[in-house]
Image 1 (cartoon, rainbow, N blue to C red):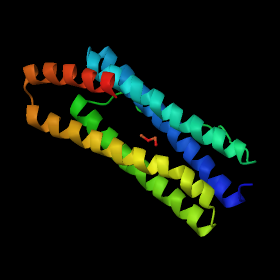
Image 2 (spheres, rainbow, N blue to C red; image 1 turned 180 degrees about the vertical axis):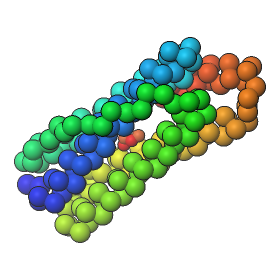
Image 3 (cartoon, rainbow, N blue to C red; image 1 turned 120 degrees about the horizontal axis):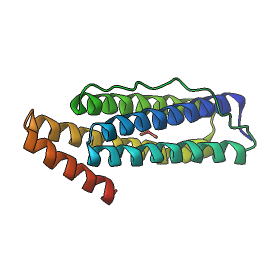
Length: 165
Ligand code: OFO
């Protein structure tokens, strides 16, 4: 049975993952409208992955005798300015998510809930990967600068990244 504190913290993370999914969906839609096909494909997939992260938490909370709560979300932005800015926002958002996961892990240690602590290790590992991927993307973006041909290749590359992952 989950302790109340842990259940509340997990429900908070359910909201964070749901919000992440919405933000990336909005980014995907923006990129699609701008004709950035590869980028939008990558972001649609990323949005689905966040929903999967959310669902995994929902199932866990309920399985442990808690009640996973679906809460209201903030409307994400609809205009991301440039694809460079979009990926900067994505990276910053992933750092924020990692901090949320760390706080959550901290609660499980305080409450001596080692089962939940163990369950959360998957998220800890996932965040390492997501941050690394976002950093790689930002490095690529810095390399191409404002070169149009570079953007074409980047869009193609990122399509490949999303097909491989
Ligand atoms: Fe990209 O964040 Fe979920 O965990």
